[in-house]
Length: 267
Image (cartoon, rainbow, N blue to C red):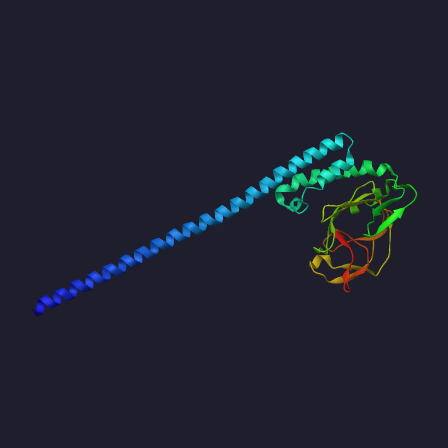
């Protein structure tokens, strides 16, 4: 009788161990399934993002093609308007690098022809670079392009607004070798003008320490002075210099909102 009880106890123990082992095996299997599910989810998200970018790129390429056709037909304003429907934020993506080059090349071409034409703005309200509204009563001619940048080619090219703020318009600035200037804004609009450049030794000009990627300010000595006449009649002066990491920088030297700088652009 005692032997039978011992045999039954041993059998119960074996059954309990087997049951626990089965649970452990099921849990491990469950863990593997979850791992595969997580990996699949991440892959799906990445594919979704890639598909969205590809879709945007194809749409932008179609817009660019239409804008190029308008340029070829001499419809420069319409061409620029078509370009403005492309999201400037997308142009900074790696997949848009080739399109970005074509975008600015076409925009420069449109601006070059537009700036050669005299503007009859008699009794017409226009929005100026500073954002104010002015009414002109006589026709005004846009300043002619020039070759002053031939000796200062380092300051020709594309610039990004350093102190980006979603509440401010500034996004990108382009200076062409013939002095043509275009400021692209975050709302899709653009300001057009012509600049001349000359040597400068002005010192104590307010700017940012752009190499620190911060809002720390500093005083710089200018290498050049760039004077811009915008199509609305406004005048603006930028002081150009070379940063420690050898990039061209422009600043208007004006304070903004207390301890900030109004406009700083980095190439």
